[in-house]
Length: 384
Ligand code: GLA
Image (cartoon, rainbow, N blue to C red; front, side, top):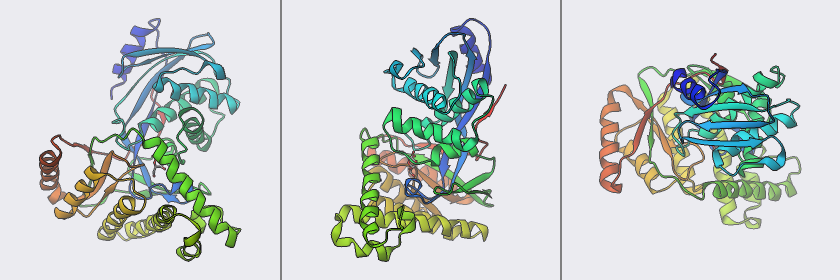
């Protein structure tokens, strides 16, 4: 994405002057899905696709915002009752409100933004948007008084309060804390994190987008969260110290098997296993044992498909295709219900796998999947 692309639109749509330009990325996640809101571990990294936004204070009490990609212009005020209807503008409004709640004296501004994170592909385009504006408003109106953790939480709170998705912290965290060539293991309970250099010699990461977007994704997501909470409530009767599924083990879960629904049991089983898989993958990476990393990715896919039930026919098909092509690891990435598989593949198998995935997917579903090579990149920052 070029700064000039955003700047020229900003100049055209407003008063001809320029402002400050910020950028914030989408993310991948090597392993650890739906573990964040269970107090567990995740293992994301920021990518070379994101949101770029230009902003300038306009001396009014309203935000004048232009989405370059959608060619759509919206104005809104900064009070709670001024919420815009347009969905993309609600993210900006939510960030303004959440920054105000955190003591930042947000005033009116003009802004134009553009993005190249594919929408609905599980690469967190919304966290990129939230983090770009949280970072920008903190710089423009807050003297950078809000620390990076709180910036990530601002984005998460926007999802909770203005979008209606009860998401965890992973996406916004990765978007703010990303570091070139590094994945980040985050403990979502303590928020302790550790960077892991990730340049697996002889391997590539490739995302294959099923281009499936499920309309019900946000309500199904919230429902998964409720299942986890129901399991925790049941376990707490025997083990009052348990706060999250992170604290529980399979024995504790089995004790309450007859007291919770079979569905909630499966969901919790997946989470307990997935949290452990993140730790296993980190160990394997330290030993450069990519075969083991890959095996854990396949296990994760199985869990997401059969226990957590956030995969779909197209993603299962792509996962099978990876296995048949001797891809080291493959699994559905992100919240699920559509979007991408993330694949760890040996360099020499890459071309054959990608060709085969595209051709066989076309044959089966009558449309093409999309292929994204990603580069692990830096988190939110100011460009000019
Ligand atoms: C979405 C949410 C995240 C996380 C993932 C699944 O991306 O925003 O908080 O729960 O799904 O790992």
